[in-house]
Image (cartoon, rainbow, N blue to C red; front, top):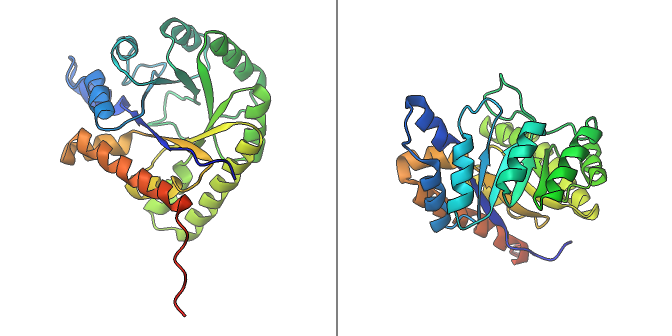
Length: 260
């Protein structure tokens, strides 16, 4: 088991931009949301610059890089256009994700095993610019082994199938998916990769997955922006931070002994 590391929270502010773009103008501002999230305990900010610019736009990325005091993680497709934007803006990190125009959100992980050469080219160009690269993949041995072979230092495990099983009450499927995530995280650490996770996480699922010591960062967006409507963004981020820290504390806390 790796040495216990604090678990980081990356807050994805894409859907603040979704609300802004529904009406046009500059309100609500995703950069302001990022600053609020950081003040409330976020360790970094994630933003996905999609090829169709459906939420985050180029100016948002430029302003985020100039104004926020925590690392910026740029989610992006592995296209030459996006690589050139990243090399110009120089975010702290870039997470390569699959992207289809017709999808509502990222629906699965990269096929790293089937796209080794094109992904390697993108990883090499980003690394040359001093940008730390992660690959967004399913917790599948073939994909994790391909990520290691491509020489991306980080993977982010797609947790969507697990979270969906939890949401519909399919306990058997949820248990199987969580076991797959656990095995994948262990395999990735053994391969020398840093492990992040994200997609579909809420307070309860973030608390549970934070108890996996191999995972050092969670990236969470849609749920937090949704909770912000009712509780405010700062309160939602603080509650997520508490849930994650509570889950992390389980690693070093012995299980209670059964009564005799």
